[in-house]
Length: 116
Image (cartoon, rainbow, N blue to C red; front, side, top):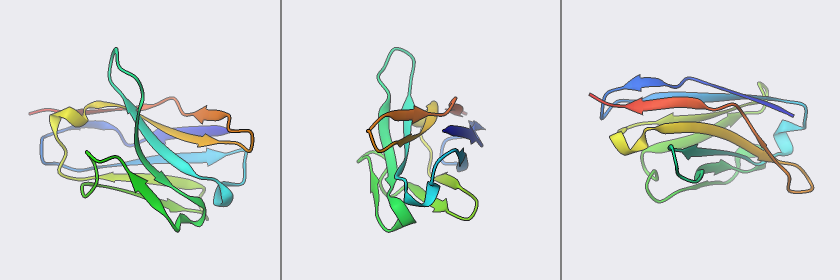
């Protein structure tokens, strides 16, 4: 399993970013895909999930209405569109999936910094 995130960067408050996670090594279309984020000294927190075939999504309360998770099964890629960004959204964002034994797989992370 390989997960490679991209799209992070520096953005001003109120701005937008789109993160991408390219996946390989498993049947992407059948896998639930999630985004998490982590700040220094804190635990990794759930952000959003897209269940197989994209039929269902789930969001953390503090990003609901601002962030949108989507997936392109033809490209084995999951996205996180982040709008109305706030300084408290600053974190390293990680892509995640689990296998049939509930083992977690993570990407290397991509830094998102929201600052003026």
